Length: 162
Image (cartoon, rainbow, N blue to C red; front, side):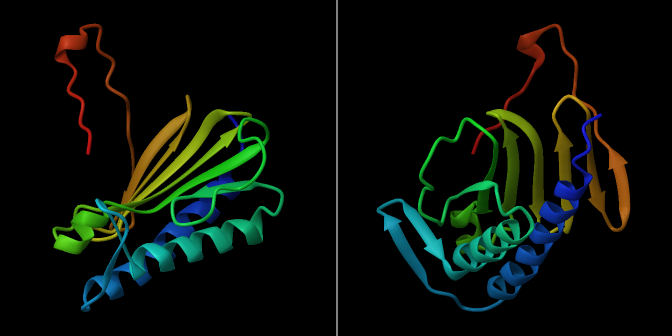
């Protein structure tokens, strides 16, 4: 088993911290700007991005970070450690206040996915996955293992996209 426990701890802490700030904004009136005609952005996107990116830079100074609300870094993204950050996945849902948005942080090493953290701030649910190793959800102080469904019949598998 790969020891990425420090990375999981930092990513989880940053996701929760960003979620706290995001939920304060969610309860207030907030402005909406547009990066493109169908691409809204709020101060929640920007503040969550800053919390996560700054935190990752502090703890993993040599790692590359690709974040939705930051300029694309120079250099190859196929070698070494690269963090991918979507500080507010579901900005339109955040704006409509339907609770269906999350914070996503992932790590690749030499272009191979290694871990992912997804935090759902409206429900205080944290999902963590380690490629080919383990996955779990933390909710109300309880950690529960998750298992992938093994199906030999692709027609029986449902896919969801947003």
